[in-house]
Image 1 (cartoon, helix red, strand yellow):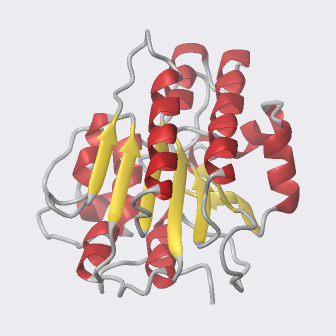
Image 2: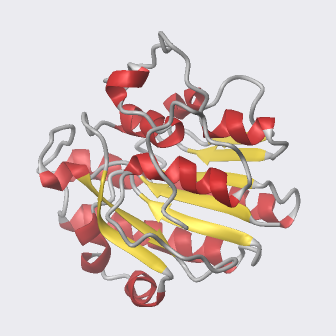
Length: 259
């Protein structure tokens, strides 16, 4: 039975992957099963709205979260975690930004760990949650794992997107990706993506640098036939739900990228 690992690097521009100097990332781009380096996020291209849209497959104007402050939906939409939980799937979150706790309703997650980012920790928090995800796959083997790596976004805000410091951290995040994929059992399908890009020292606009994200599916897990179309961040939840045999919510507007 398929399982899914979703890896999201906050603020990772598609062009940063080739530019960061990671040999592993270069090889991934050449050998992956599927990639869309022109996938689109939602506007406003801000972290919490983008994540809510990823997990609920509706635009921010529908779920009502337009900033990094959570507000309850006026009209509820069941998200990916609720749909997986209702299908009997076990879900786990490993993340470094506390606001992401609101992506799932209380009681829906079987396991979660937040190693909050502080400037004195830097990339260490991302390594901590990567280690936790690796341990979970070896022990509990959740059906769905969300691994969020946040330090690239923080570095972009401090030094600028595509700066030397930012690219160094993107390379470090790919080292985390390499570690977790080396330990990922074969039954897991994997998606590597981002929530938004960035320009100068910020993001949130409708500029291509902010709105374009990578979606990469490595050679892992059972094979798929892909639609071959450019995709949206809204398509990720329907794709994962299809892989795991869960029904999408009737209000979702994204579509699976697999046939």
